[in-house]
Each structure stands twice: as structure tokens, then as C-alpha cells.
Amino acid sequence: MNGTKLAPRSELVGIGLAISGAVAFGTLAIFAKQAYAQGAQAVPLLAVRFVLTALLLALYQKLRRRPIWIGRRKVVDLLFLGGLAYGVEATLFFLALERAPASVVGLVFYSYPMWTTLLAIGMKLERFDKRLLVALLLGTTGVASIFSISTTSPAGPLFALAAAVMVALFYIGAQILTEGVSSSVAATWTAAGAAVALSLLALVQGETLPSGAWAPAAGLGAATALAFIATYAAIALIGSSRTSIANMVELVTTIVLATLFLGESPTLRILIGAALVLSAIPVLAAKKREPIVAADTA
Image (cartoon, rainbow, N blue to C red; front, side, top):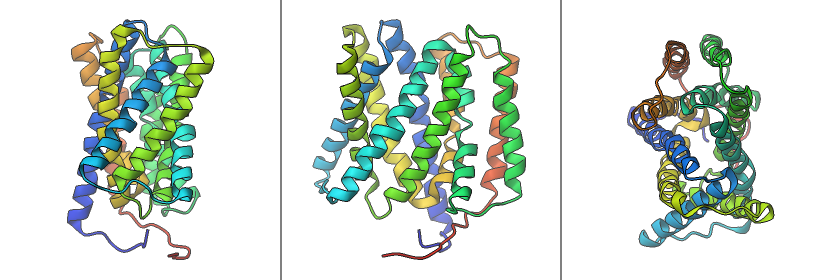
């Protein structure tokens, strides 16, 4: 990042891409719940999801006639980013969905913009702003309210919180590792890393995907491919912190879709928690991006 001020058009395009990625990501909980209803287990479902995502993204590169090889170092970095950061995050998120309603998991998980912003400041990728304190208070209060909801076990919200921290690490890693790389190419290698890691884990566990779960798994793969392309492009334009803030639209998408397709009725407490989390968005978005440049490198 060179620290130059982005033109308003670039800002709007970046935010629009982040929101588009958020809507695509917001469908994942619905497809996952549908797959679970068919007897799917988390690891093989995720393995199929990312294999399909990687294949779709590779096909996209082929159709656009774009070279996919970006050098051994970059490829290895992105494979590890997908296999470790995103693979672990996705597993934690899907384990949470097995143990709690999609709307509850969503609200806890979508605290990740707070962790992303804190990490970005801690790693000196962005500057601290007093508005952050207000945003963190609002978001934390909203997330905390969800842990007081009666569920079968606190494991679901706890898995969701762990997934939120992991996705924050993923966003930071993506900002650092994808500079100068096409967003769609970076997404392809990240998906491939997650596909390899989760496929190996599924083989070790000896788990397979039931035939009835292949349709929602295909939906997961297609939605993830779209979300990856949009999100990586947004990170390149507006950075990891602001992308994660705009991505909180994912929360609204999940709650609305869970109500329409899963028959989940959001309680007043969930709606209040959602309002508190979402109220942090304009506070954080009002903070102009001022990345810190310690030393420009080629």
C-alpha cells in the first residue's frame, strides 16, 4: 500500500465490492444448514466446497485467459493462507452452525471487523482513531448479548467467536500477501490451499459427503467463488479493516435468509444485538483510511 489518498470513485467501488462479497458470504450459513439436514458432516462438506470453489475460480482464469502462476513464493504463501487461516476459520464456523441457530452464529461471528481493525492497528497497517473505541463498545455489547441467549450449549457461540478471530487473521494476511496480485488469482490459490488441507483432513477422518448434500455443497462452492473475488478486490482498494466493516452486511443477509428459508424467527434480543453490531459500521466507516507506511518497498 503506498498511502496515497484514494479517489472517491475507488472508495465507492471498494465498498460496493465488499458488500457484494458480504451478500455472497451471507448465503453460506443457509447452504450449510441445508447440507446438515441431509446428514453432511462439517469437514467433508467444507472439502467439497473449496474443491468446487478452486475449480470454478481456475475456470474463470482460463476463460479470461489470465496466467495463474505468480511465482513459487507467492503461490506457497497463498496456499498456506487458504489452508491454515481460512480453512481453520471455515471449520470453526461450520462447527458453530452444528451447535447453534444460524442467526446466533452469525451475530457472534460478525464481530470480526473489530478484531480485524485491532490487528491492523497493532501491526501498524492503519492508524488508531478515537472513533474506534465507540465502535468497539457498540460491537462488543451486541456480541455479548448473544452469549446470554439460551442455546443447547455455549459451544456454538464460542466456536463462532474463534472463527471471527481467525477470519480477522485471514483479512490481515490477505492484505499483506496479495499486494500486486490479481484478486481473482489470489482467490484461486487461497481456495486451492483450503481445498487441499480440508480434503486431506476428510480422508484422515474417513468421512464422505452424502449424495443429498451435493446440491447445497455446489451452492457453497459457487457463492464462495463469487465472495472471494469480490472480497479480494475490495481489500486491494480499501484495505482489510474497511473491507471487514463493509462485510458486516453479511450479518443482515444471514438473518434475513435464515428467517425466509430456515424458519428461524429472530428474537427481540437478536434484533437488538444485530442493531448494536451494525451501529458500529457508520462509526468505523467514518474513519478515513490512513495506512501507515513504515518503508515503501518495491
